[in-house]
Image (tube, rainbow, N blue to C red; front, side, top):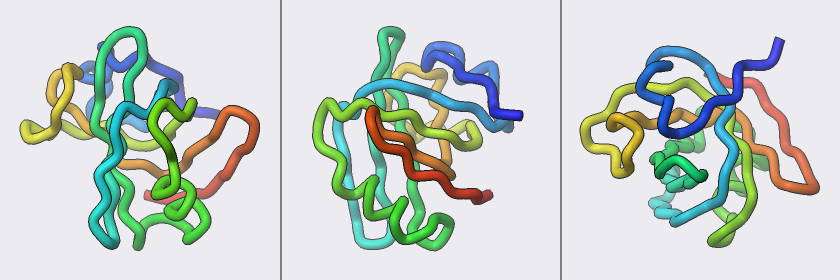
Length: 110
């Protein structure tokens, strides 16, 4: 069964749960073995976290190569993080999967 798709504004109600969030890449920060895509949808912004050691190499490389306004869907677990930028009740999603508009890269992870 696929995880439920939620809107960013509702992320704070799903802490600890696996979910899908679709939207557009607003910004991307990368630092070696970790990437922080900032996702937006019509309801807000949410920081996402991609850790190289937790993802298959092709998935991590796909995330690192995303461009601004790429249409994506991230799957992962929501966690509370007071440091996270955005409006989603200071939540972040730890990515385990990414899908692009016309291509899909699937993986299983934490």
